[in-house]
Length: 399
Image: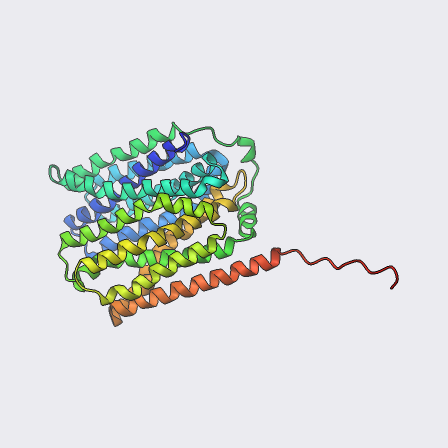
């Protein structure tokens, strides 16, 4: 593991551990303050949408002002908002502080991935993205574990205070980053022109469509898996936690070999199509299973395929930006990521309410498979447009 990437992984792990701890403690604290289920859900939604909206300008500013500055700003904003959450006793104020925290998260993800791309050569980006997402998965596992441990000794508000220290770890890691691109490479660029330039590069629209397919199946599954486990699988809360933990462990452990595969395979679109297709089939099968072990085995076996697809998507996005535009490219990546995760539950939730989980999960799977087919067609069209025209042989002198 190159030494230049270690502080990026450390910052990512700390940042996402803080986000996961916050995601665990804030709903419980809001419920303690009298929030109903709608308001608890709204606390998640406003943070996710805020992250999506600032990701693109945040990535552009990371190109203009540097990765360190934007990451320091994001860690400060998110940490301050968590301290204000801990101090507040008002649910409406919780909505405001969640928006501020979402802004910090959106800027952080775009800037972290841009910093990672700066630190590794093109040929090793798959492995670097594998380690990066493994760091994030570790954060997602460690965060709730830390939150649960804290609740054994302190109140929810004190737990929020204590866990905000994770943002200090992320902030400290920022100052360990390696040398950034020269400021001259970032100066004088116009946001709109940069975005248009990236959107016109070959592979942009296919990878956007592929990422929407991947985030739809992942976001929908993760939003409804806990309540599905309770209502359909008949599992107690502890077993649902084990189910989610097993999936997270399989997801995390698969990222390193997945990154090596992505580096060695030239056609990333087929990796995305295969990974999304396998996980979409999981959604078709899952509603017909019962108990704990069959769903657990299914998720553990198929989530590495989707994880590999996400790494391939990240590598393609990183290749869309040139010197001085990597932050903007990864801002687009973060924007599509958060929007896709937010849209899936909204689109298919009403179907699950009216027709049941089988109909909702099946429709989600079919939409995702259709999107991957569209991605492959767009990719083929891009290839045809870039293919040089065949040169005609010179005419014979005698003719």
